[in-house]
Length: 145
Ligand SMILES: [Zn+2]
Image (cartoon, rainbow, N blue to C red; front, side, top):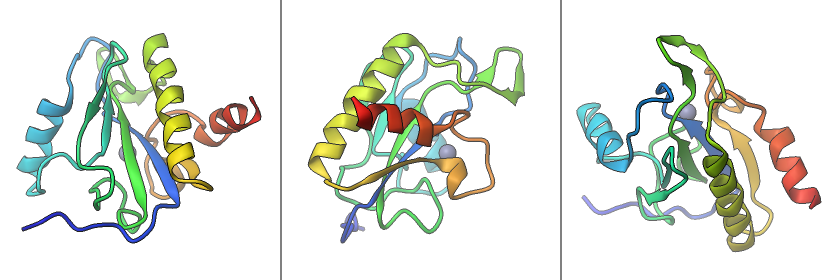
C-alpha cells in the first residue's frame, strides 16, 4: 500500500515516547513498536533522540499515525523521554538541552516550510499527558524571537 499524501498541513503536533531518561531509543525501536500495533511502521515524521539527533520517520508529506483525527493535516514529532526513571506512570518534561535545541531548530524550519502552521502538543487534541509540557507557551516564545 503506497503512502497517502496529506492535502494540507496546519498543525505540528509534538509528542513524547513516554520513556525514562536512561532509555536511548530512536526510530528503529519505535518503528518496531508501531508495527506491533499493526501500523505501517513508525507513525511519527520526526524523532528527536536523547542526544539531540533528529531522525526521519515517515516522509514529511504523507499521513502520519500519531494523533486521531489529525493525521491528515499534521506532522508528528516525537521527543524521546517524558516519564520518570523508575516510575513510568509519572510524566515529566525530562528532555535534554540538546533535544530542546534540536526541537527549536526543527520547529523553526517546519514553520518556514509550512507558513501559518500551528504548533501544539498531543494533549491539546487527545486525552493524554503527552508530551508533558505546555507546547503553546513554549511555541509562543519561539515566535516572538
Ligand atoms: Zn503523543
